[in-house]
Length: 229
Image (cartoon, rainbow, N blue to C red; front, top):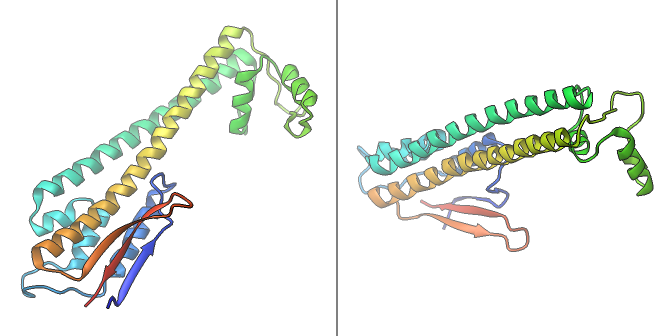
């Protein structure tokens, strides 16, 4: 019978933090209580193999002698981090660009403004038009207070549309950033599970199993790890 198991339903592909995936993978490693080998002398520790791949995808595969798959996971990790770095840099520079553009052509003060404010100024030519429409729609909570630095008025319709295009581009880059973070988390977890599988296949760990799980109600995807002596 299994003496140690860990089931994580709550893992989603689009994770908010790389740290979340690493913590989940670490807990998966901790749940492994022992190893069964055909030979116990020069066999790498199962815990260490999984932990290596949890820290750096592919490292556990290298320690088993499977450099081919190890390179695949490691190159994937490097590629994802390059994409992440590039997307963060583009997002930051694009945000600075549209804020400066709005300050020059709509007279706004971008300091301390929430994201919704920049959506609104891209949809309306001026502060007055926006507030009047919110009042007609009976949305008083959406009305911006006067004389508190929320005023804007675009010099031309063309510049307002240009601003809106730049802001939408920034939002698209941010989505790429979130998906890339999710890919990094998934790469760590899949590499760890694959390292466990290779260890089992190579050294005869016959009582370890990893089963994918899917919650049909919430749509959440995860894995169940069972390990037994």
